[in-house]
Length: 77
Image 1 (spheres, rainbow, N blue to C red):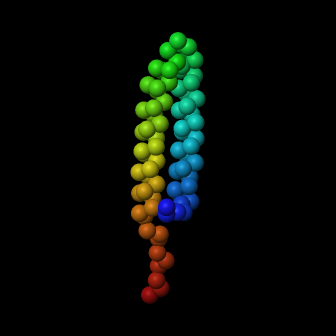
Image 2: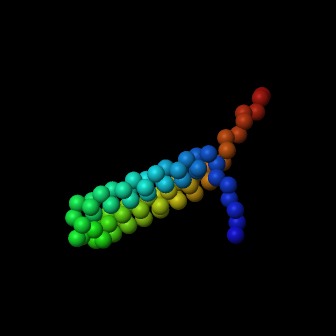
Image 3: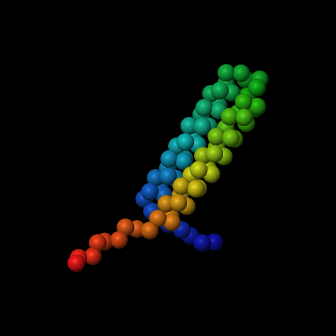
């Protein structure tokens, strides 16, 4: 298993992803609370698509940020 370290921007994306997932979870529970008999269906229709989009978008951004080379220092002429 390879261990990778994230740069600061990647770490911020991970933190943002965690906050978004918690907000999506709270939203799904809140919407399900409106109609307790349909809680499971509302939860699954709301949380799962939002979470999938969030995770895939975050992974894509993290990979894109990993491919960006660090800025090189200008050489004096």
